[in-house]
Image (cartoon, rainbow, N blue to C red):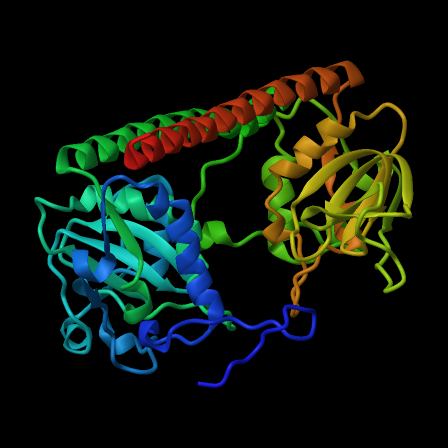
Length: 449
């Protein structure tokens, strides 16, 4: 063979691999990802290691009919697990809750898998895992992993191990409009195999960590859920019980009360329920009455710098960059007007507000965080206008009625809500720390450090 030379410069970068070692993929990024697993996991390992295909059977799910959303196949007795069901179960290490089911016709184009099996997502969401503990069908975006020998590979350990190396597995997927792996690519993932007693100890460690995490997250959610009840209680508002009978879904009001405002019933029913309750302690004021100014932010032009600026750039979903310029300086309430309607931020200082926000400057005598807490309480689906992108108009925002207690009471309510949110945030932080500590502990057990 003739000699050849490779120039490693900006114009010529080559990747070499033995053709005999290729298994279905020619792109270098796949083999680089495998090499990352080798260097970061396997090379540090003292235990036996095998490829996934040598450790497990890989069985792909099936649903052959197109289009998949044909209603004739659904609504029966056979669970039909979706990728999203696996993602949700994987995040919390819980049992899989299915959201769809197949009837006999649907079963004829699918396959019923018997438990126990480890389900693994290979399309769109790559590398999420959950243990199947009941008979179920699933599509070809999910594969079932079945250990060849349960005495050599525990399914609970495999579940834990694949979660730990998920970032490496994600890199195996080719870059395309929708990431996906096939069985041949997945088959090459290396599996570290400690003794079975070590595997079971590892799985137990992670199970305990997930339980502790969920306990703290549940406590945090209870605190957050208590905010609405606390706020309504302080304002003396009691919401009526929901009654969906036909006569109670008809809302009537005097035309004179809505003339020049919104005519749609959902909008008016919302304020009847929350802010016109006769037991409310305080008088209401419209947003436009307590605001010094309500204006939209500005779009970002191509000549504006977003990277490495010193002023935060607020889109409708919070800070999305940093600018060298700013549109506002002071204290403002930022409200998403489209895309993320219902997101609110109290911003102090200089910032760039995008044209996807309403930026409100309040008059003196109003607590920004108190007003934000009232807006957090609203059901914005009743306020938005339709269209390709739902939108909260300036008129709708300006007409919102807010109970206004004395400023001392606003401050008291704001401080209490802030403490509740801080307590919840601390619990969420502790939950994440619990998981990170457990993962490091398990990694040491796998690597036998």
